[in-house]
Amino acid sequence: MNRLKSYEVFKPGLFPEYTYVSRMSSEVMFSYEFRLEQALKTPGYLTSIIGPSKTGKTVLCEKVIGIDNIVSITGSDFKKSTDFWNIVAIKVGLAIEGEYSKVNTLKESINDENIQIKSSASREKYVSNKDLVIDYFKGNNLVLVLDDFHYASEELQFDIAYQLKDAIRKEFKAIVISLPHRADDAIRKNADLSGRLNLINIEPWKMEELKEIAVVGFKELGIEIEDLVAERIAVESLTSPQLMQSICLNLSLLSNIDQANKLDTTLIERSYKATTVNLPYKDVINKLQAGPSTRGQKRKKYKINSGDELDVYGIVLEAIALDPPLISITIDELKDRVDELIENSNDKLDKNKLKTTLEAIQDIMTNSAAIYQVFEWKDDQIYIVEPLFLFYIRWGVK
Ligand SMILES: Nc1ncnc2c1ncn2[C@@H]1O[C@H](COP(=O)(O)OP(=O)(O)OP(=O)(O)O)[C@@H](O)[C@H]1O
Ligand SMILES: [Mg+2]
Image (cartoon, rainbow, N blue to C red):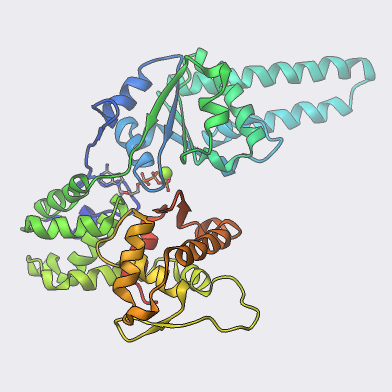
């Protein structure tokens, strides 16, 4: 039997056949797989999966349903005024649109009286096409997965919810996936759907669960990894299984383990750096570090212990990047970190200055594209929204 290669085992961004980790949802102490299976075996219910980005929502569906039985459609596939069932039908190769236009062209060649009849015939078809899709899904044991539901407009979200409400009564299986707080109104707070919902909240990954990816993966490869090493990588991955997969893969590649059969742990930090190479955060850092316009005035610079001179915006980002990596940082923790950074004790920054700086950064993020929304400043705390960003400011080229 051929030995597995590291790129077959560690799969950032794809279904991880050999490093799949099953997790418990701590709210209810059942595994996520069980909960999804339970949901799918409760006909008449719609399933709503909500969780932060890259926490394994799609992978969970693939695990439980099987890739071949998923019909996946994303929120952005739905354009305004396009019929929901039509889009689903096209996706599975039921050519409904063609039949429509045939009916419509016929219309023109007949007299006024018949137009009435024909257009109602087309409406009839409309209804039965929905049934056709539902039958096709049931017959082939398919599940509709509506991914990135938050990308659909609010109006459309309500329309889709309405369509699904009717379909699930006919035992059509559907899952709606979305980021936290973005689809609550149309699905979870929709009175029409109350009592007919399976709610699955995917929680952030814990360190032990992340560690498991390295332990299982290197075992598959027949390579020993010390517990402490797996733990170090897990701490660095913060809450992201994808980051964990990426670092393990890069460490394997740098160690050349597919030939050498041995992990070179002196290369861990280099593998972090290699993992940042393709992350898209350079512009984000530049923009946040620049802060709001000063209309030509120069900001005060502070000398930090590395010898560099940074203004308050640079200092705040530098402080966020310090050890240990934390998913949330209170203002007191941040103040301690800033004090640690600034050499001259007469030059310390006070908490109010740090707060106004963070408010200004929050303003910049709020008024920029989605990629810039990497953390949130609220209730005197920094909450890291994008673990990859924190990883980048720790290890990337700034
Ligand atoms: N259960 C798991 N075990 C091991 N690795 C996992 C698991 N779940 C996810 N991953 C890793 O994380 C990556 C991202 O997972 P996935 O695409 O499912 O996240 P998502 O929540 O659907 O993200 P998005 O919000 O972008 O749609 C996977 O490609 C895989 O590398
Ligand atoms: Mg996904």
